[in-house]
Amino acid sequence: MTHPKTLATFAGLSIVAAIGIAWIVSIGKTVAYVAHASSSQWPRYASSQHGFSIKYPTSQALAAEDPKGVDFRVQDDSNLSVRLEEESMQQFIERTEKRSVGTFRRDHVHVKINGLDARRMTGTVGFFDSAGSMAVELLLIPRGSSTYVISWTLGRGPAKNSQTLDAIYREMIGTFELTEIKRSDRLTYADADHRFSFDYPTQWRVVRGSFPTASVYSGMDYRISIFVYENTSLQEFRRQQGDQLSDVGQTREFFSHHLVGHKCSWLGRETYVFEKGERLYVVLVDHVSNDRKVVEDILESFAL
Image (cartoon, rainbow, N blue to C red; front, side, top):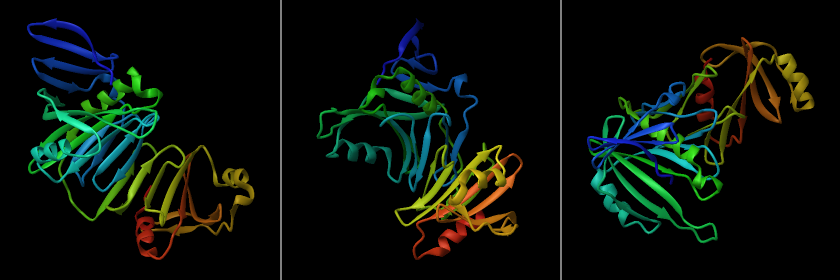
């Protein structure tokens, strides 16, 4: 990982910056991650199920949710994840130091993340190939008897020496906040940029991207994908897709929010198409096996 460059030192306080994007303030043996203005326009990912939020650059990062938290991937095998572990910080440290995969150790630097007390562990994860090991940093934030673990790495590929990527991840860490925990058996995915949302079971995962805009899935059995086309009408979409789009039904209302649209077949899959303003929303259902009820519940919750 890239080490920040010291900009100034006075009265025992040194201010360091990682490529001028994410600011890190070091006071004695305390390191504080503080968000810079560069992330002011980033959207904020929030999990009421796990009680935290964090900003990320949608133009660069893909986000994937799972039952414990969320993963963000910007480039190659680089990664930043946030997990809520149901064990104390001390228990997590002891378990991690004994793990067989990788070598991790705690250091004696006290960490502040957006004002929250944290501890840091650093280590490497080895692989049985010629690409070498991967440096990983763990930041631990206690909350009651549980612990938030922010894990990040620049990976082993060409990005492992990227100062820009290093700065992006440090900037993201500086935006981390705790929120109220609201546990339920369902989560809500809301895309503020494209103005749609849906509910899904906690054991399912959501992947955000550009095409499709979002996918929610469970293992290999189910997948619902939402594609958002800007400045596109249904007529234009039909012309673009040709024979791949068929059986376009009459206009009617769908789902619990009474969305007006069409049911059709796209790429041989069950599909729903909705026009709203300058956008066309295409909801594709794929790989449905026995438990159709779960899929129907997700579709019923879809809202624009």
